[in-house]
Image 1 (spheres, rainbow, N blue to C red):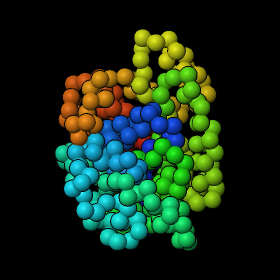
Image 2 (tube, rainbow, N blue to C red; image 1 turned 180 degrees about the vertical axis):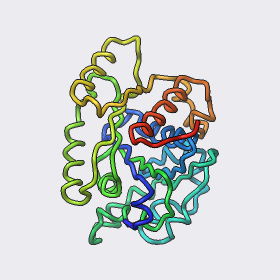
Image 3 (cartoon, rainbow, N blue to C red; image 1 turned 45 degrees about the vertical axis):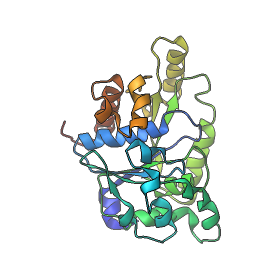
Image 4 (spheres, rainbow, N blue to C red; image 1 turned 120 degrees about the horizontal axis):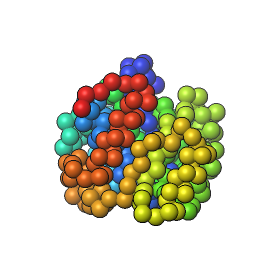
Length: 265
């Protein structure tokens, strides 16, 4: 990775191969929360479903170029960076073209490091967040290879720990084979319902197993959080007084405090 990026920018994957755990919601709203705290943030939509893209108000049909074109070398990465409705937040969008990336990169040497090489040509941001697809395929491997660390969102349900061991194994494999600095940034409990005893029990179990890796902030089930993607807005613009907005701002502040980073609010 280029020195300008590695010295200034921290790259963080938001990953969990289990779908429906609030991964994209976390990627979009953590990025937005950090931008509110005066940090410059680039969100990269690494998922062919493009939910982070539409969640920040970009229309797939109006995108001439996106992440796929940058990865295969058709455009410079800087050409696919788009501003968003938040001052310090930018996005590299994605769409269904990304489905074919494993075929396109199949014969390329060093295919696991293509995204890392792409990031080296981007001017530094404070943070680059990578919204990974709900799988452990080549795109996720690329994201982990390019990252300093990983945030793992986990839903507070009975099967919360199912599949986590597989993800941890992949993280260790990438760390050993491609990216020695990679580590788990933290585990985030999402869709927390205080009325359900099982949610409390799962949270206790996760905190017992992973201790300080688990963020103190939990993300509640919140109607406004569920609605905001369909309006193409992060929660801070869609409903800034909601519990969802409060929680993601608290997460952004906890994230920065853990790193010993000062911020303005």
